[in-house]
Image (cartoon, rainbow, N blue to C red; front, side, top):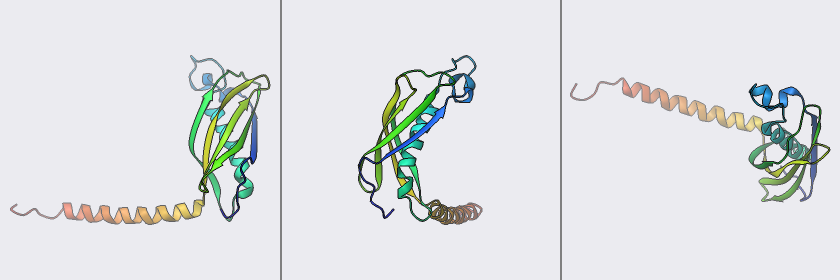
Length: 151
């Protein structure tokens, strides 16, 4: 991420609530209301959309922290719109003020924090550390098969 991300940059995401987005879909004894995890996911997408123009060369942004209040219920068929506004940044982590609205009232608010990563570089680091761990594990396994002194 070489581009400067300005404070105040905004992103949005919206979705119409379907049954699979409700509490009832996951647990039949619960009411068919928009679930908190789906609301948070939509808020994350709003923040991701705000950072998208600033991604470079294979980068994406990923969530690192959330602090959300789900304040009002929403039923199937309602249109939920989320907005994310960049509030602060230390150059590595980007803190967004997020809100969710169902067309009648605000249903959620809080903060979402994101950072940039390059998935290819992460995979490369993981492959190296996994190879190292496998080698160390093999060495430990081989050592455990050695006869013990005094046996």
